[in-house]
Amino acid sequence: KDYDQLLNKRPGKTDAVFPWHQDMGYWPSAKVLGVKETSTCTFSLAVDDSTEKNGCLRYVVGSHLDKTLRPHKPLGETRNDAHALTIDVDESKGDAIKLAPVLRGSVTIHDEYVVHSSSGNYSTDQQRRTYVVAFRPRKVVEAERRIGFTHSHNDETNWDTFESSIQ
Image 1 (cartoon, one colour):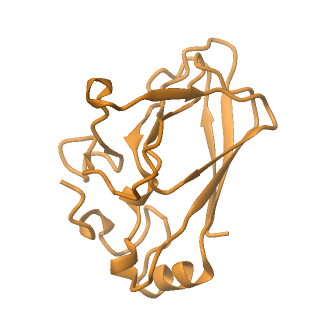
Image 2 (cartoon, one colour; image 1 turned 135 degrees about the horizontal axis):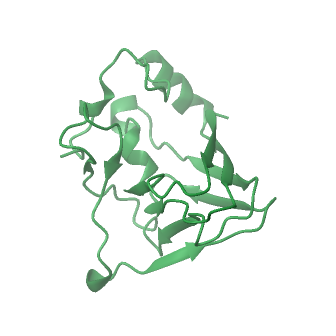
Image 3 (cartoon, helix red, strand yellow; image 1 turned 60 degrees about the vertical axis):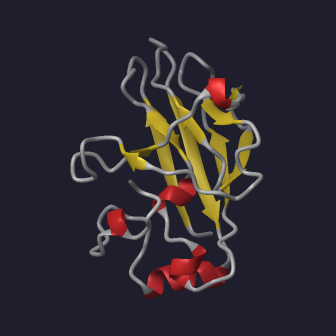
């Protein structure tokens, strides 16, 4: 296991949005780490039912197949304004969007190149909690720690500039 986190979208938190992104946009590449590949597998356990109304996961079908990182840009004016990154998704250019609602206790699984997001919670009485666990090869985790990367916003290294894929 590399890291885990609990996400909680409280009822009525329509601004609790995760913009379109690929997880790999936040992490050092294989080249930066000096490894052949990073091979992340992320499991998301639905603690509550996850529906369109309360902000279920949505993804771009097949976006992981070519293992290409799309250009990411800061959600705010700069990365200092907002940690979040976003990418362009355009159905008119072939991006097919699919919702992934799941029942409590279900798991979704994706790799680091899947383009995904989730909307805010428009339900007035149902929160959406998800427990996320990402698994990566030991050599990748060790390489990240050697260069000071821990998946924390508290890292001393400025990871906002470690890849040219961030515009």
